[in-house]
Length: 224
Image 1: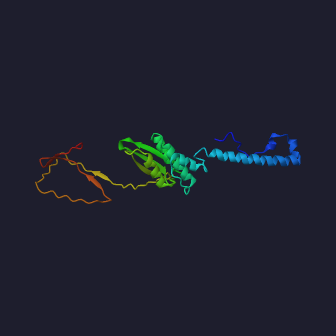
Image 2: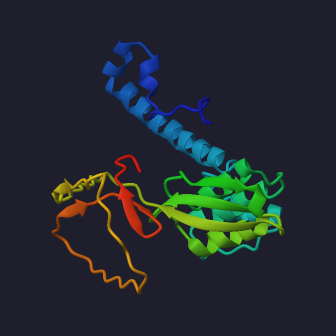
Image 3: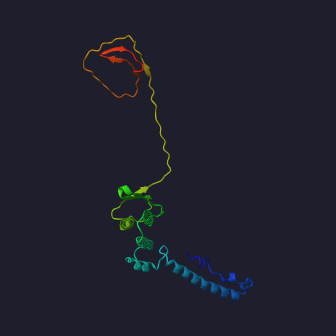
């Protein structure tokens, strides 16, 4: 921005032969001249900063007046700059990129993300916890520039490095299979079937398989 203005302190002796600074009278004159140039350099740098909203101080009132913003000198310069920038950005088309820049004006780390949800007619704003500089002004800025038919939702993201340890206890059980004889016949009389159940933690599992035909177990089929 100010590359055409000297960034370091002015020292005129660097542009003259070295033997001249050995004269005390000439050296005193050079120091006085250098100090005068240094004051001019500082004034020029401060003047140049007023042409850019991000660095303006004394010219903030002129920016606000030009854009039709109420002048409130009780606000911090940073807040006044944010209002000016929001007003300038308001003349642009409202896009995801525009909303991202607008939101990050009020996010300390500038890493907020805006996600478009066209099916829901809304946008979702993700930001890191504790980074919002002013919730009231953030909501005001969003509601000023977001289209009337679009909703929005703020979502805080907290990133942390954590390890999840899981453990489990395996319970053992025995399975005993008893095969019936193929020629066994058992008659089953019609009656009421009573079923009783309960949950247990330690058990043995016994499975007896057979085929029931017309109330009589006629044969064993291991594949049934």
